[in-house]
Amino acid sequence: MEKHKIALISDWYFPKVGGIEYSMHTLAKTLTTHGYQVSVITRSYPGVPEHSIRDGVSVIRVKGRPLPGQNRFLMPSAYKELFSLLKNGNYEIVNSHGLDSPLSMSALIASRKLGIPAVVTNHSLVGNTPYRLLYYFIGKLLLKNADSVIAVSSAVEKDSKLMTKKPIYRIFNGVDSEDKIVKVPFPVNTQGKLVIVTVARMTKKKGVQNIVALAPSLLEKHKNLLFVMIGDGPLREKLEITVEEAGLSGNFYFTGEVSREKVMRYLEQADIFALPSINEAFGISILEAMSKEVPVVAMNNSGVSDIITDGVNGYLADSLTEFSSYLENLIETPALRTSFSREALRGLSNYDWNRICEQTSRVYRSVIHEKYNNNR
Image (cartoon, rainbow, N blue to C red):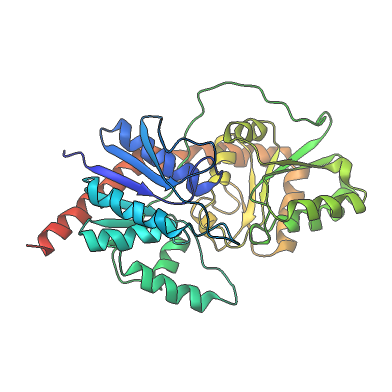
């Protein structure tokens, strides 16, 4: 089977920490182990080499600082360099990641001009925002430059269909096993505590404020709860102040941004995983919790609904009231926590990165075949 030269492109890559960063790198790493020649093209950061090799993957960082006054868009020279890299790189296919990444979308435009087959992986949901119609319109314009779309969940697939009539392939993100056995204790005492962990960027979209809002009623009955909030973001400081003013500092711990290795070690010591995001495109952190045998409570009608079967391997809530009730069920019923954890482990083979690599490479071959046939 022919092994192609592939460029995976996004602004969102290490050292930034997040779902797209993790999934794009793990896909690149897995493709490399299967014999493909893979380059990740991304933005530069101070002190980070412009060219490096990470897990066998070539990482190329375009030069260019952000435009003044914001952090999303780079100086025009960065996009010119990206065009040059694609023009001279002999890539047989481009896989852009993230519709909200300017580098990703610029790569689609450049690929169309250069005649390189291009796939975009959509990792996000537009959500219920006042600007949703504008976002869908912009998405339609941008996706005209792609040959096909990979959607990371059923919810994202449905969303993508509102923006393009191009072929859409549903391929889940995955979770890989951690080979390193490193004990990373919580920096706070957990003895006698029931630990409820949330892993998310501290933003309103992720619903982390709802954990803080629900905590007082849960703590009235269960004084031994410790809520561990893993991640950083604009809401973190405000939430810490809210917790302190409510006199709940002893029941909360905010980690700030930590490495994925630490996240996995913290999850190993958790009793319950809680994520109240209503617009979760997929939920890699939920898969990670399940892989560590931590029972999950999440919100229904999002990408998480592909992973969790309500009442079987976790809980899916239709409201915050129900979310709180489900948390209380798990707090009070250790046997239910054990049952959910066992069921969760059984389904993890669906999220193996080797399987995802094969599904993705089939999309690549299909797109390349169609492109060549249409150009004859």
